[in-house]
Each structure stands twice: as C-alpha cells, then as structure tokens.
Image (tube, rainbow, N blue to C red; front, top):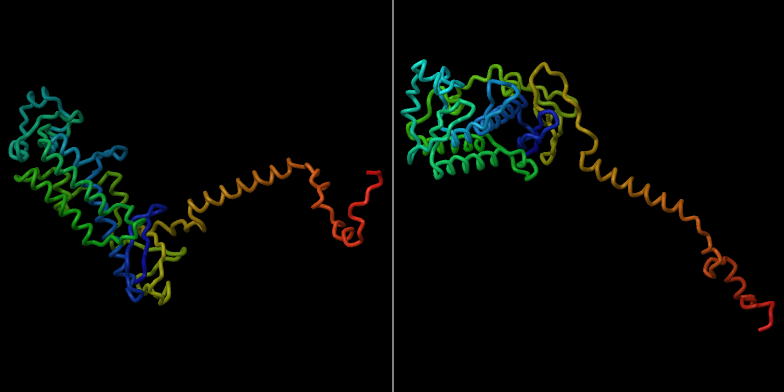
Length: 301
C-alpha cells in the first residue's frame, strides 16, 4: 500500500493509504471526502461566524451559553426583545438535561440557558476526543485518517448533544445544521476551505495526478512508497513544490554552519606558535638520535 501524506498548501492534513493499482479518479474523490469531513468536525467544534474575520467555538459556546437564539432575536437587548414582543419558542423546548444554569451570552447569539457542570463536561470531553481523532498530529504519529474515523468523530459529537439536549436543537442552530448537512457557508471563510469532490485535484512532484490514470503510473509498482501530495481546487494552478529539505533539517544545518564558523574564528585568533619549540615538534629528532648527537651541549656541565 502506497502511503500518501496529504497537504493543503504547506500544512499537513492527514495520511491516506491506497494500493498502487488504485484509480486516481476514485482516490482523488476519497481524499477530498476525508478532507471535507474533517473540516465539518472542525466547524462543529470551532465553527465559523458569518464574519470572515471572526470565529466562534460552537460546541463550547453551546456548553457555556445554551442553544442558538432565533435569527430575528440575535444581537438584540432584553429591552428590545420585550418591546418587539419576540419569543424564543425553541429555547423553551430545548432544555438541557438536569436543568439549565443561566449564563448570559454577551454577544447575543445564544439564549443563556446553559447546561449544568456535569453536562458541560460531557460536551467538552467529547470535543477534545473528536479533535484528537482528526488532528494533524495523527500525521506525526503515522496514523491514517479514514472516512470511518471522521464519521465516528461526528457520531460522538452528535451523541453528546443528544445526551445533553434530548429534545434536540433548534433547526436554525449551526450545530444541528452541520449534523443534517444543511449548513450554509456562503460568505464565510470556511467556504473557501471546502473542495468539491468533482473539482478536487491531487498534485505530486509538480505534476497533476490525472484521474484517468492509476497511482502506479506515477510512483511505480513499489507498494512501500511514501509520497507527499497536495490537494486543491481545480483551476488554482500548480501548488508550490515541497522544499528540498524540511524546516527542521534547515535549522540543524544552519546551527552546524554557525558552530563551524565559530570554531574557525577561534583558530584564526589563536596564532601562538610557541608549541613549535617543543621537542615533539622537532622533525630532526629521530636523525640526531641515531647519530648519537642528541644531547650535545656547547657549555660545560
């Protein structure tokens, strides 16, 4: 099985295994599917707001401030809501298990009826476990991320929400919309990261891996090959090539040259040649020894 280290730009994403005989059409779509599913988990845990410059932590916000307010109530003060006679019907239904603890959302996006500490810990623990399953650190650990693993992370998040909110979440809550694949990412930074499966491309060694060919057409028949491929949207051109040496290797190389320069500088400063008068530095000592003139002195003893 060929090991593919999938990157987006210069950032590592995940590892993927495939036989050399795998068709690149199916393999490209598989890589895009895993990539997009990982983004979904990240959005559920660390969702994106409608403002490109801001980010919200959706699941943690759910744990801290309760469910989403209706769109027509978001950002309004209590006085404005009372004056307009608006009512949060879904907020009255979606009560967390064990009762709610009021904690006002200063941003005005959520209703402030947060779950108790025990239920809050359920959500936060599940968030950490889901993040670990799809983390980029899996690349360093040599763990391949499969679609089943990503789906398991989503199922765990969905299960935690059902435990804390057995009545479910409002239909306009971003977390529920993500679970039901109804999310609207238009106008958000997150939309720029998603790659449609039909438009996905894999690049290796400055070459596009064409969908009509197999993986072995590019990397050969050695099933123990490891390559770095870059995934991107069609029409974006060729991605930047991988550097010849890694950043860590470059740091070590620079450190070696710096130490070498310091050593040469010290040698240049140390111009003392008094050692040349030492007996061991005399290149005629052996000759004089055999001639018997080793210890001749011109002064009387």
